Image (cartoon, one colour):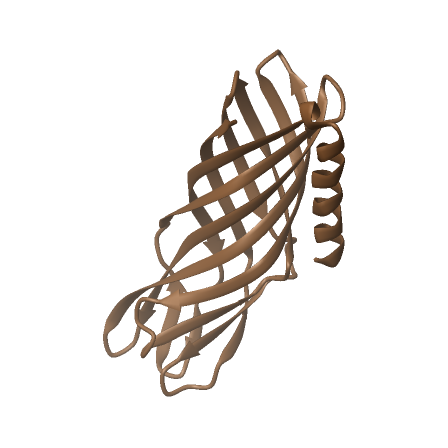
Length: 204
């Protein structure tokens, strides 16, 4: 995280020295999660994943042109991602967990075909909190680390841009802690945790 902030500061400072190569913009979009784990039993209740839920994200974009085709991009994004769970015991409950994250993606991009770009890099998570739709019944703590991988395809026409991206955590390193009312917290391995997103933005 410290190295990310230093890189982010270096990007802004270097851009101040060459303002014509630095662009500032804003973006907003929607996301949905592909979140999978094996059904787990906690006490007398079985917990399984629910259906996909939509979330959203907004952010500031800093793009620094390294050359005609390559650029470095850093963002400060506030991400709301929703996850659904189904609890089956004496009764059936559908619970939604909303994860709220402040993230700093740092990406290297490559332009081609005039308006298209490919990009990839790392996402550094500054904050991560969760809210349950039924906190008295079920809560989840995400223990998926402070760094994720991201990549995608973008389209830019003049000052407007459209991005499609995926963000994922390395398999085998993602664990969540499930807390069910009246039972001990249980650590659960997550087989897949991918966030798909699309956003539209504008450079000033």
